[in-house]
Length: 596
Image (cartoon, rainbow, N blue to C red):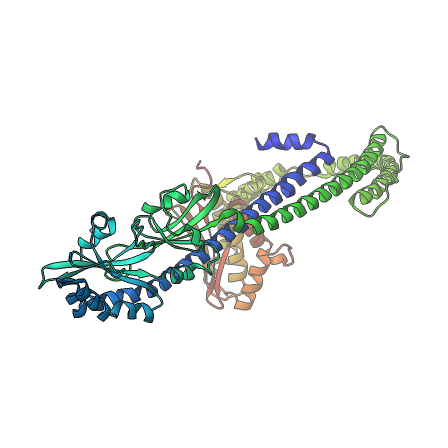
């Protein structure tokens, strides 16, 4: 798939590649980001409006609770008012006696005068001798069947209801309704404290959005728009059942417009029911500014993208045109026209290519002249090299001549009883034959140690008792392939630098062991040793790039062949104590080469 895409891209013209790249890399991402930012601003505006509304609702909730605490406290006082108990339970014999009792009781009017939150106080009683004076009201059949009256008689808790009376003395306000029992008279009545509508509406007048307070029946008891007071939630066309809606924020269509509605509840102390606080704001009004800013931003982005697209098109056209001219010059050169000249101006990459094209044409002409001259010189040199090769071949000595000569010397010594000399000559011949047989291939540990042993025997002949050696190799290791001549140079180094610089006997030990999956090779001697400074120089040399120290060429060669064959961890390791001896070791992977 990726290769197919690359082939398709390679088949497109540069102009089209630039335009497609601009659309994919710039235009589409910028439009996506613009839409995302627009959505983000819109969401932020809504979240801010919802947060503000929730705070406002909390404020209204707190203020309403403070307002309702006044009638609650008044009802608590009147519950134990003896004068009230006497006036509603006494059986009056005449209208004059009743009128005197009414005139003597001033508490209801006093509370109304002292507290602006209270619009009026009423007491509903079943005493048949009472007459309705808008404060003490005998209970009639319509009152007994009313929802609020039945709810009040059912509990001693406080109830908050909007009273939609249709009688002669309508209330049409939020009222505190509470049963007042008189145990000693075995009677009861219902106290009603009417809340001042202006005070309730005043709590909502400063709200930025439409805010309502409703009772449990869905009646609007207060509203920023006072025309809504007395209506039910069903009449207001919210599109959802707010009466049974839990606290929180919902989306709905209010009066045909998408809106967000924040709902909360307030439950005054000792109340049997609660009031709902509903705040509504149209989504369109909230996101209007955000949409305007986003629209302006999108128009600006679109304008910038169009201008950029036009610039990309112009640049791609000019670039393609110059490349096309350069391509025509290349075609002429490919057809053999070596006099073509490119005249594309500019200091950009295409201008540089044009100048380099001219340099290339000039270089080709010069190279062609040089090739003709070099061909003639090479022909003459080849003839001379053939003549030298013939002379060198004529002067070569056949290696078999050396072996035959050494064999003749050995036989002569043997005939004359010089067995030791004969043996040394045999070892020398064997060592030379092995050295000449070594090519660029591999050998085994066994074959390598045969050469080492021959070398040590020859050196033993030279130094006598001053040299002692010991060779140990595990049987599992003998047939493992290794690069040739990696042990003999180490042994030679031990003898040359260990024995020749120290008096007395020097012992050279060669140990080859198999430890787990690694072959450990160690050549140690108890010779002269090396100082720390000299050891640092030796390690730097054998690991360095140039052969500057002729006496350590063999060590350096072994180290480099080991690291090239097996990797850096498998190079030479040298330990030495000056005056005590030197140890040279390396390791090889046992499975790195095949066995014989």
